Length: 406
Figure 1 (spheres, one colour):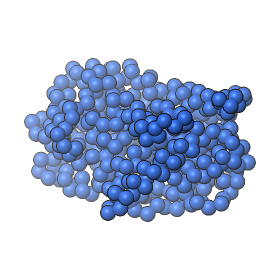
Figure 2 (cartoon, helix red, strand yellow):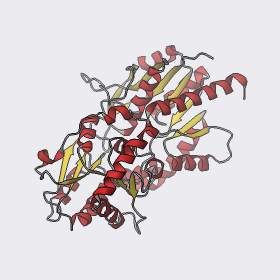
Figure 3 (tube, helix red, strand yellow):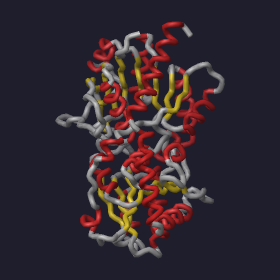
Figure 4 (tube, helix red, strand yellow):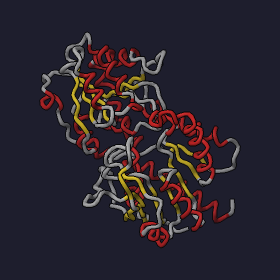
């Protein structure tokens, strides 16, 4: 078997739009390229005149084949480009590239394109399941019920057509295995997204206090991510309000933008939070993480993640984390070592357990220092080369099985 593989990566969205999926896709493409593999990234074309840029992952820029694309309608965020299911030069280039492995990052338009190419090449199709789609059904309104059932059936069919399905977290992997039942394929493996730990450790912090008009001794809690209903930022605001009631030094920085920003700003303007919450708006990834690094404590309220990539990034930055129980949290956060996982709430919107954890860690500077040191020391478990090793091993396992007929 050739040591250098030809890998075609198909994605539904890509840079310059920034999300966990685009960060993960770039990290995979550049990481494989750094090992000498030939990579073709098949992605929706950026808007005319825009360059994709980079989210900061190390490694060579991959070759791109740009699919015809359009700005997705609401609820798709601005800048989210969706591929058109049409014959295109990009698909011709993908066929001529003659990949050994086809790796899909979405099961939808680009995923079906990837499946067709893999079938035509008799190449293994690998799929990374990045998103818990059922957690986004609130965007479907009255169609949420039937839409969820249709999605479940579609995903089972797509998984069954893959040689391997990679899940960023163990809980999601278990759910996929349960849905598939006793099928002999696909392989289902846990492979979290890796990050460039060394680059994050060397990132210069940006102090959010002067730009927010806060005193120099303010203790800043930061959260980084899309401001949307599925991220439960409203629960974080309520938890912060409770935690901050008895601690005048506490401040909250929300880094990111999204459809819920106006409602969250309105809530933050009420007397209990007025002047204590700042919004950065959407920022390039490294600028967002530099602001996070200039803060004291990271808070995470989402319960809809497959991994919670930003948790790994926060720990690599040396930030102790307070998080709610949820998918991916236990895979990333070491409770009591580099952060605190809040006790289970009686109801999904109950902010009190998160508030209690925030208040406890905010009140204990020594514990924060100990957790910060443990976060930095343990961050190598997230390092990108380890994840590329795992993906390479899966590719070779699949190719060997194809060759031997196993």
